[in-house]
Amino acid sequence: MKLEVIIEQDETGYYVAEVPALPGCVSQGRTIAEAKANIKEAITGWLAVMNDKAKRRQTQTVEVSV
Image (cartoon, rainbow, N blue to C red; front, side):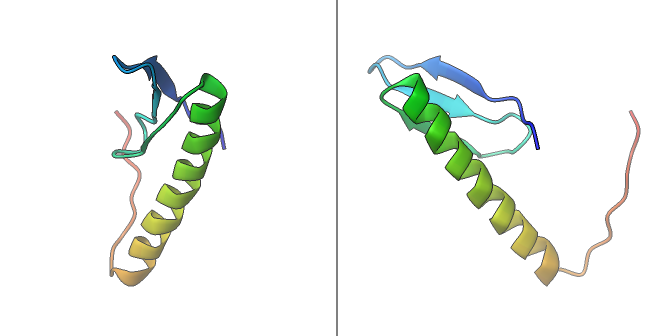
């Protein structure tokens, strides 16, 4: 799976990584390489949590074209 990740340096010098397609999926690192490694871990965790939530709920998944 490929996801767009936005990495920006904050005012303290840390690199903040965010995944726009995954609300709340954010991480950081002291270097860009560290931020990339940390966001990969955050993505894995985000997907696992959302998968567990989906399994517990009685929901219906639909596709919508825009």
